[in-house]
Image (cartoon, rainbow, N blue to C red; front, side):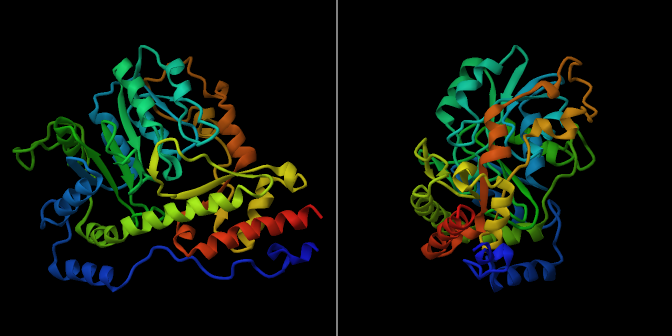
Length: 405
């Protein structure tokens, strides 16, 4: 019976590829035009970068947008520009990519990990205020997998305590919370255009904001400390060259034309897949209906209960599912604070007090997600027809039937 599983040589449930990125001659021709122009840089050549920034700001319903080299730098620019000082504390979730935490360290600030909501895997608003101290200056909610955080509650907490809110929307291109685009709700919102992201040019980042002073400071930090109206060799702040090139932007300008339709497709497929897998004993999709009006499904996540699969470890289940042709894996193997970086405090952050000990941090919901529950299906798998979603559910049922026999 086990020989019927693809991992053991049996036929795959899904026998086709899921290509990413999606592109055609439009991107090829656009890049070729820039190459032929000889104007590749920024800001010394042409207006393509500024034009795309304006387009992206309008798409998100924000006043200002600023490109940069990647999503990590986008977060770093936003945090530093809010005015944090060495030793300030920044609240973040431990279930996210490492950059959400390392940009805090790079600013000589202290990452404070607050656990995630068991239903959504986003920062749990009910746990935030207990983590706030007199040194807390900012909250970075991560719209993980494209699922909107509970921004009403988070922004209300921030307002009560005079904290800045920087949205990590690196998974949230085109997604919405109560009709507002993710990234446009807090003081600033940050995006990544890295190769796996829903909007991509290989590498790149963007910050959006509605605050002119914040925009001007981020712009200076991105451009080696220069200021509006200043000279080329006149530097006012400790910035660096984080500028994006015209070649990257011309790809994004073409890719963004597909984003709205792709986001709707992912949203509809995710909703449909929820209805299918929720009928499988031992499989539970993350909860919807907490404010998101459009889910970008950069990752489709479901909870796996091994007791309904003859105690098959999550890692083995994920390998079996991938072998069946579902683009998936087991997600983060551990919370951020369990990384050697934090356990050994392997960072030159002079402002972190000696008493801060990440070896003592415990976020039970995050640990359960990492070690036992969370299985991820990747975003490009969510762009196919509904029949693909049916095949994904079929593959899960196939594994359950075989391992439980």
